[in-house]
Picture 1 (cartoon, rainbow, N blue to C red):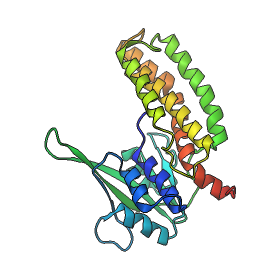
Picture 2: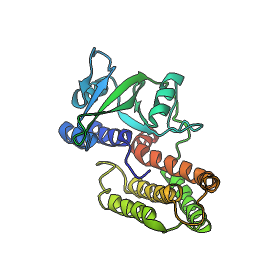
Picture 3: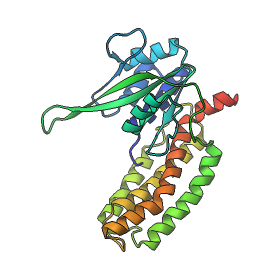
Picture 4: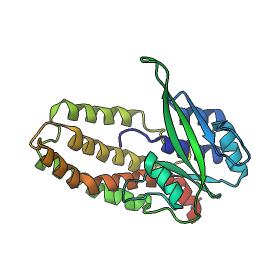
Length: 262
């Protein structure tokens, strides 16, 4: 939850580009981030992988007017609409982008290349057909914000009960990571997103930090394998809520457009 999903960057900056708020070069630079290169495979009319700039332009000509994020997990097809083949690929990758305005979806496949000490990351986005249907289980921003407030209280209570809140170097590192992420996260959602979406995303990341503290810290009262399992189970609904809120934030501009807000 702490790291920004690649599909989130593609959705956010792709939406800004489609809205004419950023240049193609700026959008691609933000989407690629620290990766070496991104390519798109399976784009209609192309027999070989192409670069992001060409791919985003082609998607626009094919009728795409917006991009949605999906963050599925086993038993929870969050943001997906089918068909089963696309859902399976997205679940395997734990993320995907679903186009709005045309029946396409994109699933990332990540490769590491290069010798030890000089490894770089390459990403191939696979374009696949999707079903035209509402995405699964995505709340509105208002719903997500209300649910997150309760989830944050629940996460804090669980951590306190398990005696792991703020304990140990792993917990401290997780909190530091969130704080550093928040400092530079104001433009994560790209131009065009409402301030409420940024607020919801940052709160989702804060909840995610507490989940990392609870599930990865070996300190505190819960140290056995069974206790660690119980800790994960206790926080599973909280993690689900945080993922739903993250998707709601990234998808907010498309949802507003669909409702005629913009």
